[in-house]
Amino acid sequence: MLFVDMLFVMAVAISFIPILTGYCAHSRGRSFWLWFVLGWVLPFASFFLLFALIARDELHPGRRLLGEAKQILRDAEQAAARIRAEK
Image (cartoon, rainbow, N blue to C red):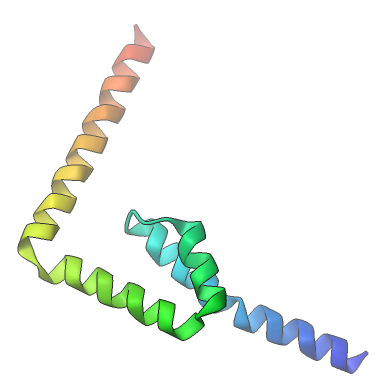
């Protein structure tokens, strides 16, 4: 029984990396499930790859502005949908 408990604890601990990788990817506009699976297959490599992609987007002014423009467009679409729903 101790072995089963130990396996369960290890599985929960190991699943932390894929969940964190998926969450970070989703919060940056990337696919949660793709990065979650990559987190299981290549746990540390996927985390550092995602970190590098995020850093590239944040440090490059053009990419950062593009991201801000996409967010403004998303907000405008949501506002327009709310106005249409109120009518």
